[in-house]
Image (cartoon, rainbow, N blue to C red; front, side, top):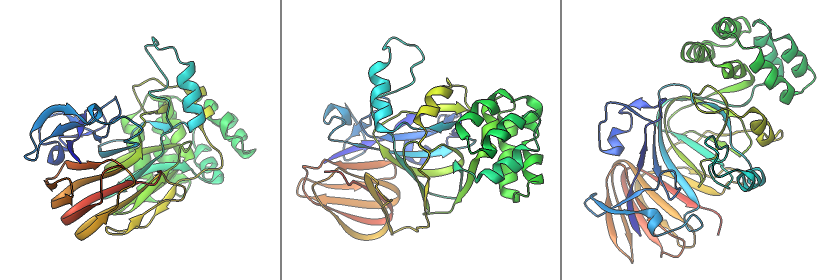
Length: 360
């Protein structure tokens, strides 16, 4: 059993000092994510029982096979990119074919990225495809979208995407809120398009947002996104659990490279997000998920051996006890147990994210 802190990511969409409670430092700049895992893009630093750095990282002790999951704390101040994560076969083939010297690589690793977000407060997202008739109603209110609308009327989403990107103009993007309002969307959804139009007036990817379904989460609720499902988080704070990958193929709403053709290859038509109307304390286990999560507020829970486990303290206090050690956690500190480590017990008085791999 090892103790880790999160590795800070200061992406520009993050909340200013939004993760200070867990990162332990104020930077005066955006704090978007804290990573708890072994992915080379942000391996977690080890700390001692007082929370002081040891100079080592979790990746010095375990490889990605032993630590198959990546857990994050996320704080979004504005919309993230419209993106899709590649399924396993697409990721493996793309990584193998990729030129290692390419300054703009598509793939960050050869692994599938499947993820779930559990809301720590009110959270907004675009996730999955909006019903086509609704998307068409919105797009009809925007100039230059007739070819894309024609493609959507025949059910051809793949053809509509590049047509919409090509139809993007500042005037069209500015018209998103009015088009959403005219299509009869409720006020919170119109406000989401106002945010997109204000934050990304010159980004062609804004034109894809009418095609995405709008979703709100309250505290404890979750959304599970299998690889191949398009999405864009809008704003809020949450716990993300995912397979240990950083593969993100972007379609827009970003200053990072966009790869439209590769994103189209990664889309999976027959998959949808899974919304889970859960509350703290309930087991969150999406269909076909490689992980299971419980947000434990109080009491004692046994965490059995045989799978990778990470116990991340969100608020309050907690103790983790096993035959190996007894550890007192503080917010932003996590205990990590490999599948070979013995049973452990977590005693919570606050809020602990208990994450376990379901794959042996």
